[in-house]
Structures are given as C-alpha cells and as structure tokens.
Image (cartoon, rainbow, N blue to C red; front, side, top):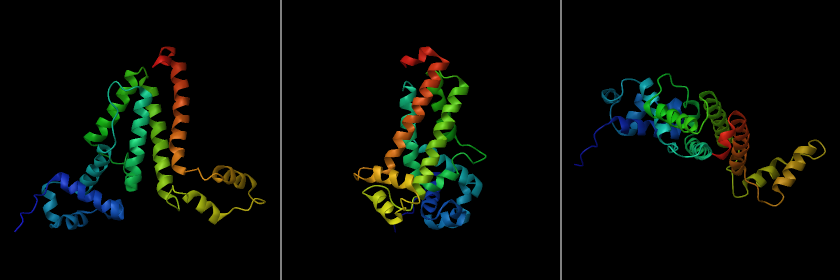
Length: 222
C-alpha cells in the first residue's frame, strides 16, 4: 500500500486554492477542501483552526505568488514588474480579486509584500504619503483591469476582439463614435485588448513621474 502523504498547512491551503479555482471562493469550506485531500474534515483542524483562518491563509497564498521587487530596483521597475506579476496571478485566479485586501487578519506574505514595495519607493526618495498614493493608484488599476479581463464575453487574442465586434456590430448611424473607434482599432487586425494593460500602466507611471519630479527635482535622474 502506498503511504498517504501527511497533511500539512501548506497542502490544505493548496487544496483550498484548487477548490476556489474550480468553483469560486464561496465554495471553499473545510468539507470541500477535505474532499480534495481525501480525508475527513475534522482532520484539517489539527493544522487550520477554522474556515476563517483558512481564508486568511488563502489570501496570503495569493500574495506569495506575486513577484516582489528587489531592493535596489528603480521605482519604475518595481511598480511595472509588480503590476505585471499581479495581473498574471489575478487572471489565473479571478476569485482572489475579492480577497486581496479584505481579510481582517493580514498574513506575513501580504505584510512583506506591502513593506517591500513601500520600501523600494521610499528608498527612491518618495515620501511615505506619495509612496502610499502610488501603491493605491497602481493597485486600483491592476485590480480593475484584471476584473475586466476576467469578465469579458470572449477570450482575448487571436482575433477574438474583431470577431466579437463583428457579432455586436453597432450601427454607425446610432453610435457613430463607437463605430469609428472599432473600425480604426480593428481595421488592420492588430488590436488586442491585452495590450491595453501596458499602455494604461505607462500612462499612470508617466503621470506619477511628473508628480515625483515636482515633489523632489533630484529624483528626475532616478
């Protein structure tokens, strides 16, 4: 008989993520997680004290998968790399969008994540207030984009945007500006919604760069 892999907190959290990936975070319960692991629900309580604690751990599991900037990175490198990584994680696990900042007991991965990014910004000359504003603005953009991306009625890429536009086909006489926009964007077949992410991120970073320069001219060379 093949010995059963012992239960551990890490295995339980991984199983909870599997449940959430399949059916959403509302489906995560001690019973559903135990079923994935092939054990009785009561056995989980030796490692996780409650469902709420499991959900706290699950939120931290998400933060563990977002790449952190390195100390010494420029602030633009830090914000860009972290934003791209967060978007990738959130599109892979859309259920995490409602959990990222909502848990009442932030875990060590979340705290380390926030501390590292704020640290990189403040070491680049940002005030604590400006670092917090930057963090908040980028997060709002990343979370909003990931939510939109996960809610689209088509799978972006490979001409899906053009095919969807052809299906909805807004009448030019009723919606002239929308029709013109679609014609110009999709006319050569080169448009992909996913490309909007980096474009929008650059708009935010350029605006932030001006704000930083206004606050401290010495930062213009960073």
